[in-house]
Length: 102
Image (cartoon, rainbow, N blue to C red):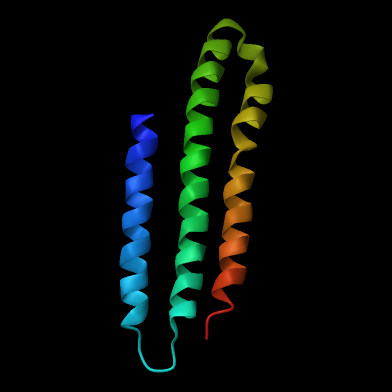
């Protein structure tokens, strides 16, 4: 639970700093543009944290399984790659959000 509190504090700090930078933007930019950029950054960041936690559990369980059954390598590899699709989806969402700026 302490890790979640640390991550929450970092996300809150990043949000405050992002809004502060959005207010000092060049002419023609609005705070909405800064918030869209912040949303794109949080999309990738939060998805990466979630995938990292998932892959930690899958990787340790997979290493134990491979020690006992080396023939299960293909199955473990698929289980380890599945969470990476979340990062790909987050990148696509951030790319579309970034296209709205300007």
